[in-house]
Image (tube, rainbow, N blue to C red; front, side):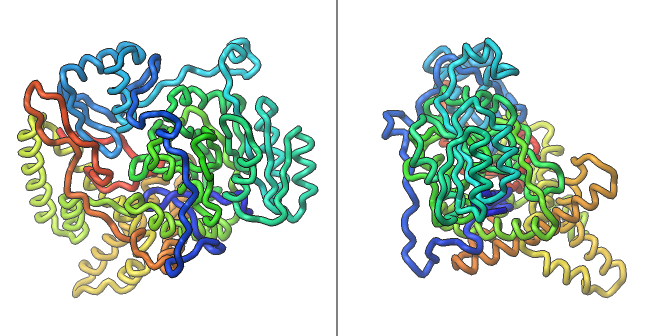
Length: 558
């Protein structure tokens, strides 16, 4: 992709990532890095960061949220247990019956949506922007901003899909053929600003932001084609004054390169959650929150950095998969792997700018011990580890006053997820060592050697094959997709290593051990409102990789 169209994908241990690849303009660790542009915090706009959701908001519990008892909910991302006081139970009953209509319901709705235990439900937008219902709906004051460098055919398709319902500004980021970009913008009735030289996607978007006066801006990459009414389909989230940005689901054809798809379930976007970032390939943003905008020193991952600065300041960012935008990324396998490498170089700069926000793998001790025993072909040790962890978890749940039934299935899922997460980490960062083990496994007997080969091969091939099973097509096509995914993991990991060497950090490589099985297990005395602190970001009950498109719903602890 050209500079103005490079897309990050936030840290493949977290899911996907991108920034700081070859051509990063920012200073390295030897120099004093300039602080990133500041976003405007909600308090500067007179907003309390913990204010309840607006009256009239409808919320619905996430499909993975379960009601363990009358006063206990389990789910969210990171998974946690939420205890409800009697007043909280009444507020939840109000939310289940209708929209927010009281102060207590507003506060509970905020807490539920912040924890990904529930999500706002938007009214169904009209099917046609020209329909009477559409005309009666309030419309955002928004400008569509499209950065581009060359890519004139893609720009023409993007402009045609964007339509004329909102003003469109095209920023030409130093195209080699400026006449082609000018002709495409003129034919679509769009305004054009040309930069004399390429500064990258962040600089191009900042140039456009400086020329805008609208209340909102809809960022759109030139290789994206939005459906009619896509902005109207996202606009309802901005009824919440604390929402700074809303992203649709960005869909690409299978096999066309790194996917930006964040899955089928809505989410609050935050680091180390199921959806840890959203790209600016298609993103509607409250312009007053942006402050200095994008960090122009970041050639890749500048959008991940902006999202994390917004959430860190107290703003909410929402992912709304009900609206789907087509992403026309394409290219040869070599080009795809090159992009994956560039995206990988972003992990270290992002980790340095946002300490603790990016981790490649989160492990729980007991599932990890069970998985390790299984890979070592020690079934008795695996069974003992599994049984002991079940006993300890049962005691902890009972001590917290929670039901402790049906632990076997969720614990088994935890072991499988640990295996998949470890396999992804190995596919990104440890594949040369594992390949060497496959080639020369050691062992005195053929059975021992082949056992080691199979164990190592399961780590490398298991995650790509598991993801390929969800794709359409025959067996050969799925195997080809798994092979591409494995190659992409290796290319991404090589980029991460390159970025770590440049930044002199190992943070994007180091797994994290989460000792707490799930947040919120502390027992609250009867009649006393819950005082559980917010969940710690690493309190995952199993090894996960935040921001993957197909994460399963959280499994209950009992």
